[in-house]
Each structure stands twice: as C-alpha cells, then as structure tokens.
Image (cartoon, rainbow, N blue to C red; front, side, top):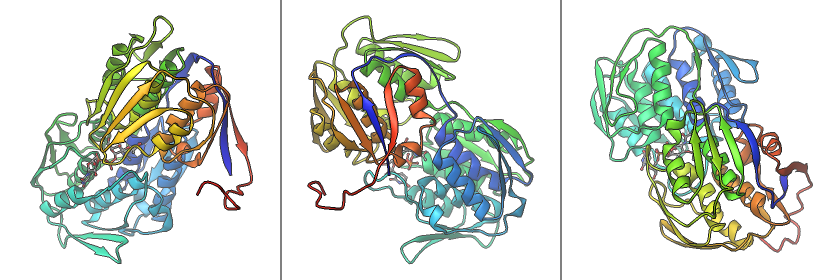
Length: 432
Ligand code: EPZ
C-alpha cells in the first residue's frame, strides 16, 4: 500500500508546469477508434487513467505505443471487435466513450457499465437518448453490460440534452461523426475538453461546428485520416495548484495553462483577496499580500465554477475567517471528503447540496483517506495547510489524475513524500 506523508504549515512558492488535460485525454484516446489511420497524440498526462484507456484499446486490437513520457502512437487498424467488456473497462468511467466511438465506427457497441469516482448516481440516460435518436437501440445485459446496436449506419438527428452533460455531449459527438447527415446537439456542455475533442476530430477531417457553445452541429463524413495532435493543458490540475497556493498563503506561477479556461477560478480567488496576474500561458497566484476573506460559490457547467475544483476550494475556505457556503449544483453527493476534513478540525456542515463552512481555525494533522480523485487532491491541500504530519491513504485515486504530484509540490517547497506501508487496517481496526 502507498500513502502520502505531508509535513504542513509551509507557504508554497515557485513555479509549477501543468500537464495535459486528463478529461481531454480520456475522450481523445477512445476517439482514435473512429479513425481510418494511425494517430500521434502529444501532451498526454502520465497518469493511470491514460495508461488504462490505452491498455483497453490494446485489448481491443489497436496498436498503442508510448513514444515518450507525453506522446502516444495509436493505430486502430487492428480493432475488429465491437466489445469492451473486460475488468479493465470496469475500472474507469471514461471507458463509456467507447460506446460512442464504436457506434460511430460500426454502429454497434457492447461496453460494461463504467466505474469511476463514486459521488452519487452517475446515470447515462442522456447518452442513450442521443444514441436512440440516431437509430441505435440499447439493452442492459446482466445488469453489467450496455449493448447498443443499429442494423444500419446511424442517422443524424436533432438532440436536446436535459442537462449540459459532458459525457453525453462527448458520446453523442463521437457517434455522430460518421453518421448519415447532420446531428445537432442542443444544450451541449461547453467544457474546454469538449472543444479539444472537436478540434481533434476536425483535424482528422470531421465536420463539427459550434463546440464550446450551447449548440454543436456535426455533419457525418465517411473517412477520417490520421493526425498528430497536442492536448490542451489541464484546467482542473491548474485550478488545484491555484487553490493550494492560496490555501497555504503562498505565491505560485502556474505555467502551461490557458488563462481563459481558468476565468471562473481566477474570479473567485480574486474575490477572496488573492492577487492574480494573467500572462499568455501562465497565471501568477499571490496570496501573500493581504488576509483572505470568505465567499460563497456555486458549481456550474463551464464557464461556471468547475465542480472538479469544489473539494479543493472548500479546503481553502476552511482556512479563511467567516462563514462560506458552497452550492454543489452538478453532483448530488460530492461531499464525501467532508468527513475526512472534519477529522482535521474543519467545521463544515452539509445540508443536501450545500456545505456551510465555518472557517478560520487552523487544520490539524490526522491520518485521512482519499475518497475520490478530487477529494484526494483536497486532502493533500489540507495536509499542506495543517500543522504537523498528515498522512493521506488510498492515493491510487489521486494518481488517476495528477501527474508527478509529489515532484511538483516538492518543487514548490512542500514537504511531501510517498511512503509504502503494510495495510493491517483489517485487524482490530477502530474505524471501519
Ligand atoms: C465529467 O463526468 C468528468 N469526467 C467529471 O470529472 C466532471 O465532474 C463532470 O464531467 C462534470 O464536469 C470525465 O470527463 C471523465 P456529466 P460526466 O455527464 O461526464 C447528470 C474528474 O474529477 N447526468 O456532465 O460523468 C449526472 O448525474 C471527474 O475529473 C445525467 O443525469 O459528468 C450529474 O449530476 C469526476 N444523465 C450531471 O449530469 C446522464 O446521462 C453531470 O454529469 C449524464 C449525466
């Protein structure tokens, strides 16, 4: 077993280079299944989710080679199956993008229900509604496998999403790229990784217009040629380091970013008193100039404040005097980290989708665990702020989405290291 051991109480100071976007990579890699030639994808983050989706494509018959730490070569020619039902597939949520990619490639797909972070219901009804509108029927097999099929090439249609779902927007886009005619997605998600996927597909010869707006129009094509493509920087990794800089009252230059993708995070940090300077491909977060003040925040689909930075921002608000309120409007249960944070002395009460934070008292070190990817990042930020030695376990969640997090934080002056240990928690454990 592995855990992070953090000696907190130090302000972060220095530069950090942001890696490629996880949520773009886990959509673009499955999208190669649609291509008729090999592709080279650059600025790929070296994280376990990327390794996993690459292994899944290999299992399906694709050739996947890591050219270097951040570049993959993928040749989908060898894929003959329309199924992805192994245990590997069950291990990550983004594997469901194979539904859209396989439907787009051969109007048939059989993929096991996805895993991924568990914070409330994670239905895929909107994805299936889109597939049905294009002529594909679905069936749940043994409660574990989704089988989506059309006897003919999918037909474009006009699809309205009840919620601006990232996954549904991506999956419908993938299914529509080679469908007959035009598909229109209304109330589409506008996250940066949606635009990045559309740009990737268009560079292969797809005809997608409007990505990044509420309405995306896709005109089906017959052939997609191979490309070399570089993935956008990770908006959420950047937001995580911005929150860490503010929470420790430090001064950090966050490099290799697209400042426009960070506008909602920058606005909130400025609102509580951080000084933020924006450069072409970097933002400087300076929380050394004045005391920070409380605020309220509501998570929203992009361009609103990203739900994937909610736990990290909550930790920051525990360090700020006063009562702050978080409204998590995207997920119905994304406060599982609060019980861990309470062990460190935080005063937070959760009422449905609201978290009421009584901030100002210093956090104290404790052994805590990561309940999901972003909650794990939040626990690390809490450890960086707390006096004493904090241990964060279940770090496999964190390593799904944060490349070289120990090295990057150490370069910012943090005292953090990864430690291997025997897990005897099953023996006479006081905490279930
Ligand atoms: C993506 O999840 C991200 N995952 C999540 O990031 C992120 O939190 C989420 O988008 C919102 O930005 C990946 O990109 C791999 P949604 P996704 O479909 O696509 C409801 C991380 O930390 N909904 O936008 O699953 C759903 O229940 C991860 O990197 C339906 O009701 O999110 C939720 O309440 C965690 N029916 C809301 O929409 C559907 O068919 C948002 O879901 C689909 C979604």
